[in-house]
Image (cartoon, rainbow over all chains, first blue to last red; front, side):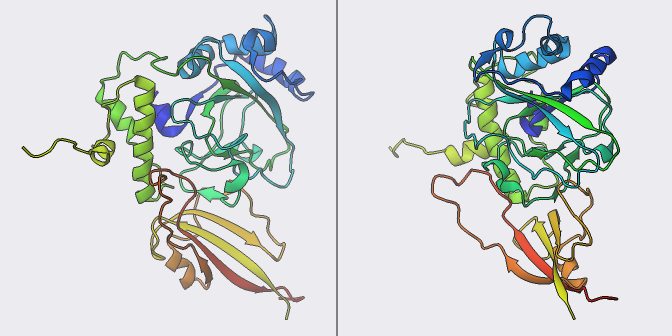
Amino acid sequence: MAHFVAHGSLRLDAVVPAEMNAEAIGFLGRGVPGVPYGSTVPDAYPEGSFIRRLLGIPAVAGALRSLVGPDPRVDHHFVHIREPHEGRAQPLHGDAIIDVRADAFDVQLMYYPQDVTLDMGGTLSVPGSHLRRTNETDTGRYQNLLGQSRLVCPAGTVVFLHHGLWHGGRRNDSDTVRYMFKIRFNPTVRQRRLWDTSDLGDPQVAKELLRTFPWYEPATGRLEFYNRVLLWRSLTGDESFDLEHWVTRVSNRPQGEVA
Amino acid sequence: MTTRQHVLVLYLSTSALDSQVVGWSVYDGTGRTSPTTGDSDEPPYRSGVDALRDGWRLFQAAQLIPPYPGGEYDVSFLKHEFFFEKLVDTSAGA
């Protein structure tokens, strides 16, 4: 979870079996009908349907439960298709509208049913951008950021994104149509200690939360730590948690009078 | 002579023009190239000054604006944005 809080994403390579990937490529081109906002998973995806089976893959189900808990709602899904030699990329963006919740977040599942090579225009994402307060395509001016991620992955890869993460479909310069299926999940329970927390005290947790990224301006990077501390406190319920005293020091307002 | 504007936007690590490039965008008014989102992992220059040394002319730099009261710890857009241009001769044979 510390990795997710720092990066804003969790990548599961080739977790979907080949026969399911072949099945997906057979129908994703026709699109997937929308579902009503706030649908439960059983309502949106009947037992035995492809998407229900996708969500039942243990690694996928475990990650989803760890991030948003049991019985999340679905308010959006979509098949993204990048056509061969289409000429341009999507502008860098965050989906929907700006989301300033500090104690809750939606996640997006992105499923890639085929091998994605660099020239197929795999999703661009910007590690550590999920806590930035920007609205949709207002970041479209940014073409490239140092340390960005240009997805190259094996077939059957699933990536979970914090909903605020900056991303965009890159230009497909190949001869192959590229598919990606995306589902947005909303939590229905408080996102607190929903994952295996047996290693919360491991020093590696703080080390991971202090990860910086090459595109961060150093000054703003310190504010990223501040905001990660607030998110980690919310996720764990530990209001004393801090990273190198960043939050504690600027919250210190002694009230006691000199005797 | 017919000229068109070639625009380079650099995002730097501090407000200093000689600080490190952390982000970049290119727009080509000649139509000869089509730069787009996510087309390169390597910055074109190490710093803003390196771009000046290569002939780019700075025409806009981001102002230093204090944080809005109450939003001092918020993170949002990149702060240190610098716009450069080169004028390119697009006359026949140029």
